[in-house]
Image (cartoon, rainbow, N blue to C red; front, side):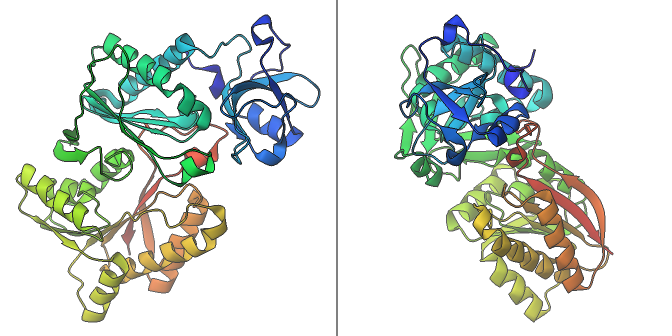
Length: 421
């Protein structure tokens, strides 16, 4: 059974359960988008008829006065209304969130199989949890909340998730919250970082945890690591790159804690060099290499653009596989053009360093850089580098990061593998 949030629902009359809940009205454009699966309505599309409190659950109606959905309201945010449910019979309480948690966990258990011990358990709107991300690292959960309404209910939601996991034989010993950054500010919230203490649960403060991905062990710092400690979405893309790496000399740019590099090294690459601008990331990458007994991989601190340009100038063309996995070059639509130029530049440099027959693995994690825009940037780079590309694979995030129909922003990760010909 799937949650009704994932499919369009017909207009419904008010039910007794909704009596007394404040309401808002949305534009015809927002009505159409919500019916098609879009998970929110913008500030310019909402009229707050009953003036709900910020973070309160309210009901959204069409201009014709028909019920459309229930969700969170926030007058501070441009995302004025966040859809929770289109089911007119739903009551947003602990039982409701537990049902949602069951859907999310059971989905991961099915699609991730043996990788369930290390995966994303809740992926925001794609699972019907506006603004909530929960990653599992063995017996540790790392939580990020970027929606005011969800922030007010997070203890109840995470408690429901812990109950669901326990019923499936999974014991969680520690829950770390990493709710911080620009998205919190846009919702009118301060950062909230620390270990969660939930009544009725015996939780500890566990900072470092060892995970296994594609047979490789990694140390994850849930307190200080990037995002929630590790980038789980590239799990199967790293395996795809590793399948091509045997006998190769590999350059892994923006290696973070060694994800692609260690996968390629373990797959039998002749040599692997991982570079990153963060010394902390380089230090952890070296620890991870030692943890796995890999001696064919080294890590160095470099700015990726400076390193690639220097390699061009010095004639250093030792690599026949280059992996580009940079941080998002844009976090808003206003800077997409500059981001396209950045992706074009970095890919042009990499293509010029590769020999004919070499392989390029190139990624973008920006939701504003659509697959079409990213493909255009890569194609423009090939033209400037005077090479042709043969597509090996075009991939996205692993299935624990599902794409929600009607919400193109959930298709944020692109990982394209090419051969230079």
